[in-house]
Image 1 (tube, one colour):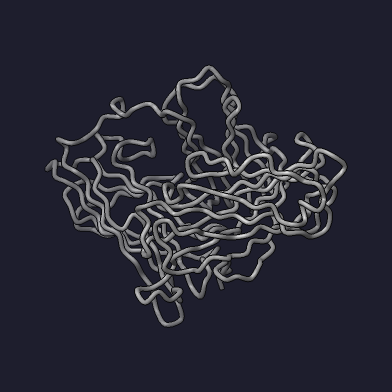
Image 2 (cartoon, rainbow, N blue to C red; image 1 turned 180 degrees about the horizontal axis):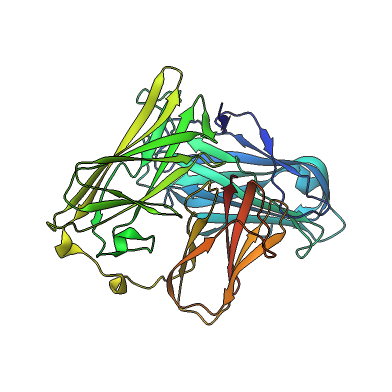
Length: 411
């Protein structure tokens, strides 16, 4: 049976995933939803609190969280809980928002410190004007760092630390079961020949995400069956780290994936002109097998005809560092890490870390060319060892900037 994990109630759930091994490596993080789960709209507040236990002499705490959709939040406030205040910790600044992420820090400037269990803070996030009661919003606790100093800290990344809003049906009742595939419908341009046959960020590439939701949880380790039916005249490809699977016009093909620890499962499609230079169209169905039969959801992808094809050289250079989810994920042989690098003079470094924060492989360390990069990793360590199944992180550093994502290796 797949493992089902998620949070949708006002009950605190403690989780932990340390990436270093100091005094606070065993800290467990809890979150508690305070706001209503359904019916939230523009101007409403998503309110939640963050708790921790097993703390040891934590004099600095930094909480990082994000949300989806990226433009769902327009303001954030935080209130320090009694535990930190009673132990002489101060929060000098309100939450600092950057794009779809925010940070909130507290520190002791005297002899105060946090030990044991305590509520850390309560947060209130204001929903943007375009958010309606049918817009599903997620707030993820990405990372909490604790330590005796800013240079000696443990980083805790709770994989399932999330608050859900508006995951409800038309009667404003919390959903019991659903399979989400996104995008549900989109139109993009065909890739030029033969760029549709490789994962190279060409114009026709589209990543589809599926998540199975049941009884308040998203399913981790959930097998999904994807059926891709080519309904147009172009050549459609399913791209994996090992091969490109051609889906010819009028012929369906299947692909398989397994959801990661957050419940996400991905496939990557691309299309390029066929012999008749027609537009492309693919009906994609994702299904999970249940005792009562398959449970499915669909997506429709349309590719514009060749007259609208964008050449790769016409794509604008990235304005900032951006790291995307690797694919496939989970993977058992090799995977690809998509990376967007701006024009910079800084050194770019890409590292693979294990679940305890040790660097097991440095994939790249050099002055990068600006643009789109695809970084492969074959699941081996720096000394050539085949690494075991488990959770890994890939970290990108460019000057003072850092981005971190997680991935799952399955042997």
